[in-house]
Image 1 (cartoon, rainbow, N blue to C red):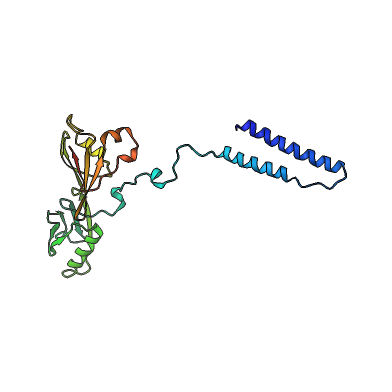
Image 2: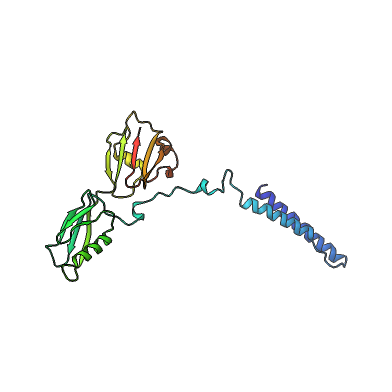
Length: 235
């Protein structure tokens, strides 16, 4: 039913009801309840509602059908120091104890008086608190600051049939497609439908399929974000 037909039906129903009321008054009878009019208008109202808010064709109320993938961004968690990062440790009014130090592969850094202290896995605030506690054994009320000068520990590996395989540092959130682009793209022998992302979850490894063709032509959410430590394998 189109809108013009709907309006015409409403007009006819209202006219019929008003005519019945005029006939009752002319005959001296008390006005009768117009249940038929109410029923008609109510029915037409239902039809009007259906016209005003039609159900879209093909829509699914299942959350999984419409909920987009939510990639984890690098800034969603506090930054934790890792091997190869460069730290600037400053002790206020004590230049002899201040150092710019790299985090060793074993996760440790070396400082005067403190000697070796673990930095990997800690936030700069947590490391600052530990250095302050260690220095308090030698100097009164030390004021320490820890600044991350360079980040080299957040990496993703791209292996296989790409033009420049290797490890790539992440300075900001990035997707699988962006990492493949940083590896100069796929070679002519790459199997675009069988790319996989290997993601470490504790002691287990999760394999996440990535279909290059589907992502290039399909929804944007299929191009998910990478995690630090991911390995993108292009067969």
